[in-house]
Length: 579
Image (cartoon, rainbow, N blue to C red):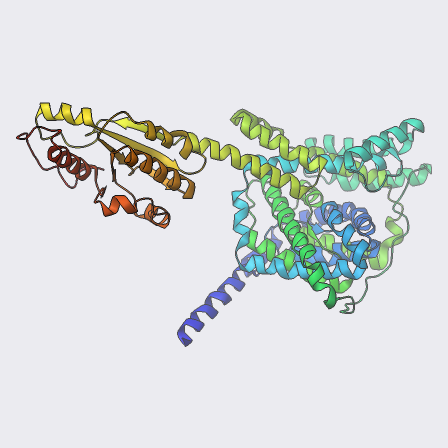
């Protein structure tokens, strides 16, 4: 018993060590400090208004958004599984948090964040990160395109210099912003946003190594300040972060908040892993570790509430800015958090004059650059199914939310995949000795055997999506005395396939047709035996390891019943022949 506990303890320790950052992971931060410094500064400038806005939108306040960006951003950078991921408060998470803060107040939001952190750590230790590999490429690409659309549309009010209407879908909000702009055009904001986006897109194409986003934001701030243009700015920032405190934790509300915590943890895991996957797709050599990413997000969500933060995830917008700004390692995300902390404590007046339209231009350019046209064309050429999944995921992301979009994409992709797999299944009527040594009996007997005996070979999977399409054909088999079912090429069988097979066997036996089964694989016996599909056949000695054994049994039966003339050859078949 002690040895078993010791082995369990060693496995648990190995699992914990597997998700903790190691020396090689941390050593990557020395790759290119200069590039990481520039990327971190750029991301921090983009993240600042987003952190403020998402904090306010969640109901916990701007201070909570900044605390989340600083604390969660730093911890996820160190403990996460992606070298390029940037974490913090996000719009998708805000949608989940709003009803929680409405019903339970700020303490409920923070309690949910803490519980979600524990759940994420447990998911990491359970190895759940590997399942991201099962998300099809069209879903990932559709998610990326949809998020790019959401990011771009979210910037329309700021780019046009009009106040956004809260609580609306991004498409509706953008349409209302355009209508408000038409009634009173604000050309200064539009010029600033368009100028910053244009500089980033054109400059980035000509000189990819230059941080045009940072330069454009600085230039826009200087120009608007000197020309005294009428544009909205970030305005006053809260100073300082709250000290760690456990006073907010509402233990009595934990049972009521458990479902919300599960939803937050699921969204944090999904959005973070999708964002990390998208970041990998934007680079050549980077590959994230899903379990470490879940662990890092868990630690971030566990600690951020202690500083008054809210639930955090990997943020695709900031991650994309990080990648496009030339980040080489997780040092860039760490610098982003440090810069935001410096802004909170010391430099708030220096950035309060940044035009919101300039930041809108940065995000619009980032959204445009997130869309990989080459990948979209490749998927479109791959088939209409892949294109449909991509478009559905992107449209659902715009119309609903990330979780709904991914679920819809996975469901449609799964249906298409099942249909494709089902098409590989088939039922073939074959000659009795197909693939077997030559028959060792007289020609007259061969003809009589073929007249009274038929063999069917089942190929591929025999499961719910395919079973009915061909197995029911067996029930209408021609008027023969014996049917041999060759199952050695069945690749998979589920309960539905087994039940349909049992139903077909029962119908044939009720018509007094002898059914012989050969070549059942060992791994399929569990399903067949659990549903007692072969029970009666096995009791009657009609289940065989090889097809030659089944043929020999059928010949003997036809001799006994007088269907085959007495005196024909009774040669024994090779027992080790192919099945």
